[in-house]
Length: 123
Image (cartoon, rainbow, N blue to C red):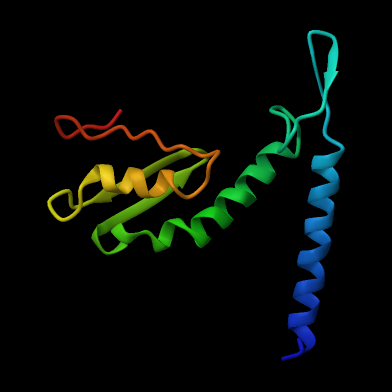
């Protein structure tokens, strides 16, 4: 089915944004101990585009993968602030290690390291 009007416009804008992001990442350099480097993948820490790229990726990652995990029906709350995630779930209905194992299988470069509640407190 061909794209119509606003769909075609949205796709064009999305494609332009992706091109700009690819250019930004491919022309990404940093200096460490007076030597210049170009990262193999991603953006260098401290780069002005790094946090924006990370946020876009994490929002996509959550939309595409996290909300569809098997624990969803037992999860009562999920939120993320930068790179910290808070999940509240019923541990009597789902084992907490299952959540971590499921999340750690999604992307080879992202690993979740949970801190569990202890004495009704989290770190």
